[in-house]
Length: 115
Image (cartoon, rainbow, N blue to C red):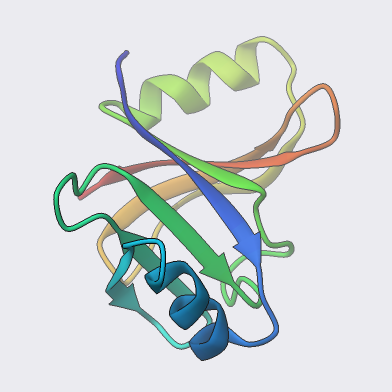
């Protein structure tokens, strides 16, 4: 299994203002679902920041997202180790397959692959 990218997910109650703030640092909006927005560097698209108000299809908002090449293998590995699954493996309408798992310090990690 290989990690493709790691994206911090920052909670925001003001997405437009947050996007404007991080835009000053050179990040541009590349995805916006109304409740989550992804900003990226135009020079290096794998450098990303998620801004999130809530998660509309999961019970909690994640603290970070990790894109892997095989989310099914990652899910099986986490189940095998007895990790706390916060949101079961799900195909989302915006083109990702994902699950949430809690890390040893209590952070919620969104593990995903694009469909």
